[in-house]
Image (cartoon, rainbow, N blue to C red; front, side, top):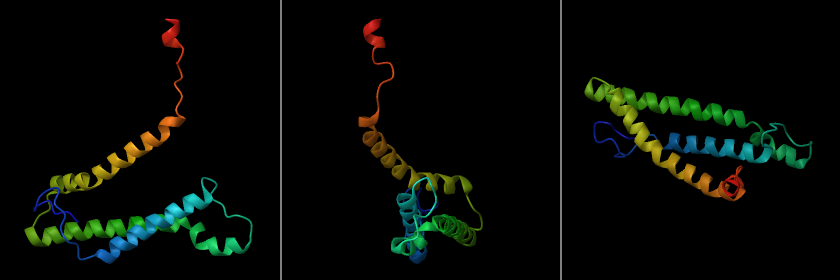
Length: 131
């Protein structure tokens, strides 16, 4: 967790590491579901693999788990700040969330842009030579 009062981008130790782990597990659960079933959202034919993949097929439960845990953790951080300081500075809270999430978004965007570059094809390749 990041405390807005201690500095916007300073991480401090969280007392809820197990919930952070469960949140990471839920993200992996959703990733496994998406990798196994893609956009179709249905299970393969009933084979031995089907019965092993049944928990993965319920990827929507991973999404639910992630949002419930995230909501609980955000509420926990806000209530702790309210108890400690008597008020919640929402501006600093939003800035701290942005500071925590932005580097990950920037890295993922850069990786996706670099990975997709070989598959892009300029639409107007011949326009420059015709002019």
